[in-house]
Image (cartoon, rainbow, N blue to C red; front, side):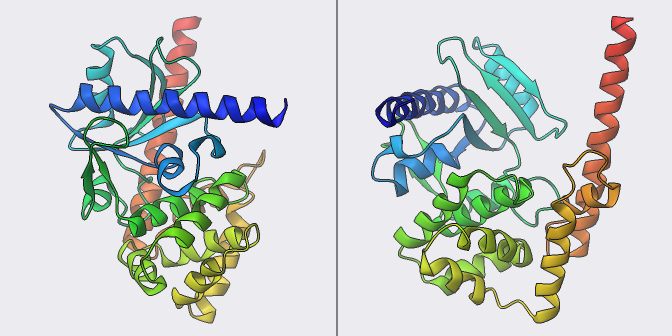
Length: 288
């Protein structure tokens, strides 16, 4: 595919995503606030042209409603559920008038176990915007947006993160007026210093943005914490391999700096696995 054709494809996807934001926000307005995140937002705020930013789905954090209730509301409006995630806080929906793209609805922006990054945390300090998508949505503070982007790199176990994830982080840091220490303070508030340090190392290896390394240093990890970050990432990097040890999979849900968050992440992961096994067993019984 030529560069011109690829650029056109990205532009069409971004326009479909913008319409999706508007329609979801309008449908859910009586029960929830919508917070656009990741590609659909970053492309419009930190890229010169949205078509520069590739994307395949539209990520929306929800404030005030569960993902399941949001999905039920949208289904009543003609949407369909494209995928029920093992995570009860995530549902993917699609609409026939917006082909080729899904809306990922997140009642929690990052999984349990990833510190304080809830929808309420992300919405605190956000501003209401009506211009970007033609309807009222909440636009998160740049510093919280950055922590969320770094958290998603961690959620992809770093090694599976897409190249544009590094560019997103570099652009937010380069184009935001907030000082580096302010970004570092937000990472501490999110209880994700160690995780952000790991994700920033990956971003630094793929970009030349000097503020990336500056933020990594500003996080102030001790040598012990740095060694722990390297050990944890080496373990998590194997978690998607066939036959990966259970401890590696468990470690991927322990991204927070605090033990209580880690325990909650492990419990949530165990619930998701048990729920998926029960569902698969039920499908086999019905199919048999």
